[in-house]
Length: 220
Length: 271
Image 1 (cartoon, each protein chain N blue to C red):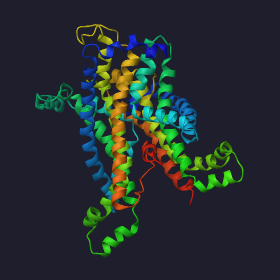
Image 2 (image 1 turned 120 degrees about the vertical axis):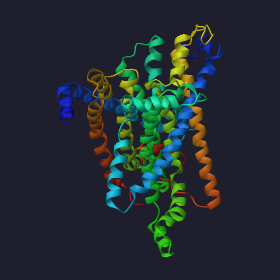
Image 3 (image 1 turned 180 degrees about the horizontal axis):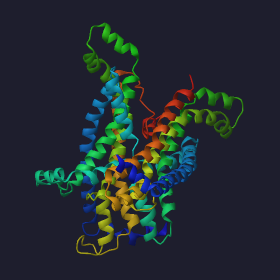
Image 4 (image 1 turned 180 degrees about the vertical axis):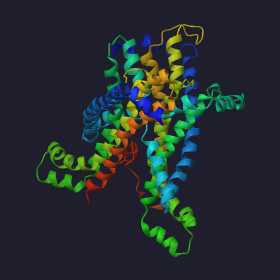
């Protein structure tokens, strides 16, 4: 037991910096994912067939490809092609673009969950289709998509571990755990604290999402 | 864009045995995926049934077990088992592994890969199944009880057949995620598509692949990605077909279970 504490006390600075880098990775990637995801989701819900299929291709491609492949392409691939991309940018961009496909789908299903009557009524009142989307459909859709977005954020926290450990693009929590482990060989103790670091982020988020699911549900 | 589609950068695709070497790697991913799928589905169902037990001393520990595994990064779990699996077990496995196994399956690292994939995915699938079972109207269970069916039998012939149908979209989408996640086992050194792709880019020109043309990393991994996309696309079409067939036979729209991790997107893919 004392060994367990010992590892934490001795390596606290590394654990802490890893933890914050994980948070940082997730925060930046989430911004990218929300931005791109909203754009693609809007394309998917737009009246134009061409734009719809552009969105569909993006979603099908990024949702069905492993994040690891994206990381290789974004970092090693671009570097080999002569593009100087920073490790942090490659990592957050890959994770962001990957999750954006899921966010786009969550937003789109939220848009379709809003009753067709709402849309019809809005159009009948003379609002343009863009106004209808922005003022009537989106505000309602956002309520339905908050829980799925929360779940995606949790998935993102977990996926962020791949960034540091595969290509060493960031010194995040799992990467730090590996480094500490290679010095101390106290795998159980080191991984225990790294697990605690991830669970501190994911488990409260899970409960929050469960709470929001019941709180925000629109009764129809 | 010019670089990406420059024909000179695509010559490697037909040169030597590059493409078939990569495909060989992908088959390893699929084999790992299928083993992990089977184990996760079985274990997931078991965990889900324990999770909805009425006995607190069963329900609570199983709930904690599920929440712990599904909230950890998968690569974390795989690495942990890779680093801590006792030497005795590893050696026993290496001795036992029959020679007809593919090379990737002869290394003890495969144990860590399968254990990690199974622990994580069975926890996620257990949550999907629990949601599916609990989404059924209470009346179903009550009616079964009123007809005098014992609990276990009611579960088997009344609840599960209906609940399983609702879980199909969410489960398939988790299986797609699982297939993608098999790429992570490259990190513990198992020779699959990721590793084979790197070999193709690093050894182009060597007698190994016998091509003698440069294989740029970006393009090689793009092809690796396309292999995953093709397989997963098939899987999601299959799930959609299944759903439509079900609807045609039973005449009711099955209300899918949503709201877990990434599945939410998949289950709602079709309006």
